[in-house]
Image 1 (tube, rainbow, N blue to C red):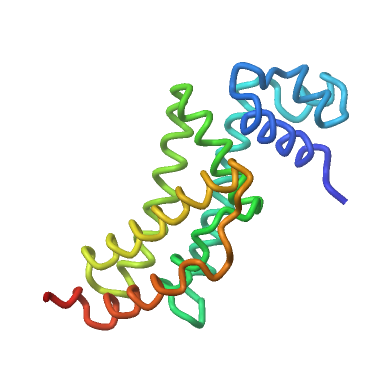
Image 2 (spheres, helix red, strand yellow):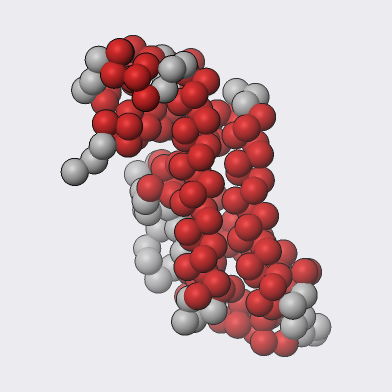
Length: 182
């Protein structure tokens, strides 16, 4: 069963994603979470504290993902590229919601997103041993995620096997250390 605190954060994230920061008022969050405004204020004494809670959620989920990435049997590079699909997971929702906060100028949101991105890059760099190769893999994954997100928001999810060819490219890049020149 989901706690009231988590339901409130879920409601806040949903409002940020669908309506934007201006419409994610305490009253709207309370209504979406099916709690009283007092219930929201009990867990989050201000709207600012809701933003802190959501940034903390993103940090926790991104850290767990980086740990899973580091331990992935297929290797971190393949894991990162393969998982660079918008699947409406808690991590996806937190990332998009915090991005909406960032758009409104929230410095904590910017820091949370940059920390998550840095964590993923650190894992790639640690395992691959080459920062440029790690950055190339990360940019491939980031581009795939951006494309998948735009398709999903437009009602056209990307097929699960659409990027198999890119996984082969990632294998060539990471196995050779650099892309072969022609």
